[in-house]
Amino acid sequence: MECFGVSLDTQAARQLQVIVPNLHRRYSGVTATNRMVAPKLAKLFRAAWLGSDAPEGIARMDAADLPKLWRRREPLIWHARRNDEMIAGVLLRALGWPLKLVFTSAAQRHHSWLTRWLMRRMDAIIATSELSASYLNCEATVIPHGVDTDRYAPAADRATVFAEGGLPGRYAIGCFGRIRPQKGTDVFVDAMCRLLPRYPDFSAVIVGAITADQTAFAEGLKRKVETAGLSSRVVMTGELPIEELPRWYRRLTIYAFTSRNEGFGLTLLEAMSSGAALVASRAGAAELVVEDGVTGALVPPGDADALAAALEPLMRDPAAAAAMGQRARQHVLQNFSLDAEAGRIAEVYRTLV
Image 1 (tube, helix red, strand yellow):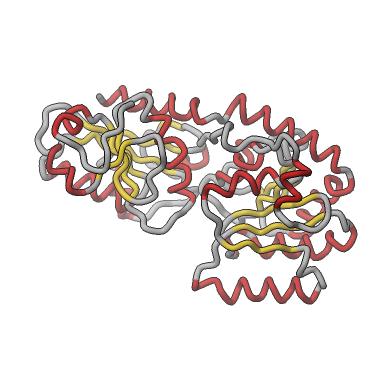
Image 2 (spheres, helix red, strand yellow):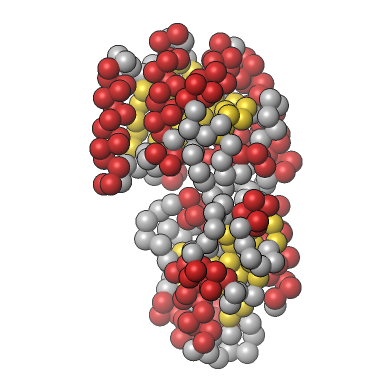
């Protein structure tokens, strides 16, 4: 698809078919999933990204371009993923923009009255899992997230990539996501404090931002690690640029998904696609994505004992962990590619335009 540039000219505005809004200033998992699939959609439709954190491979537009689309005849898809984006779409349509409104819901909980009111004004609803769909009081098309299997791919030489990270030992266990109780970072730290002393070849890597409201929580985790004498072997990188994440996944032999609750949990797919063995709490899409005992192991959320018990056999036998990682990679290639996700979203779009 041709690139429209930052500002759409009149002809480009006339040809536009899909707007992908990202009106959330803070980078989040919703942004990450949107960034991955949007360039794929842009190969199927004339699409433009409105907002921050625009990925490569899709045209960009800004608020100044919106008047060029007012009262045109051809319908235009507005694909929202948050309340504020649904609100913007509803308002724009009421003011004369020819929008067909689509909303993707990943939440696995009952929605607020505002979200329910907004969803009733959508032309189509997508849920990322059957469980997410069960919380909607409306018809929804279930389309699981996909992952960029080229970007998130195993290292040709994991030992070399591992060494470049400056981590002690020979193997790494990772836990990625914002540092907070919801993500179960404390569960991971508890398991590592028990297991790392027994397995000196392993290091633990925690990748994720620490927001101001979680500073005390993060400091408590650091004190626990220090008390266990593991400060050099439990590495907290903080938030990393998006471009660096695939390389950190490639350093991992094992990935721990420890969320207590989750909408979908894209890191599951990223880790599996990168060839890491997986131990995952039964949260988000874990039971949809993971074949227990084959492509990963499932444990109860918030249970450090169960997490440690599931991780230990993989730490004891890194070759078995590598074999599980290979099976996980093949499972993602066959079932959770971005092309498959984009193709199914495109089918929803076509029913509307």
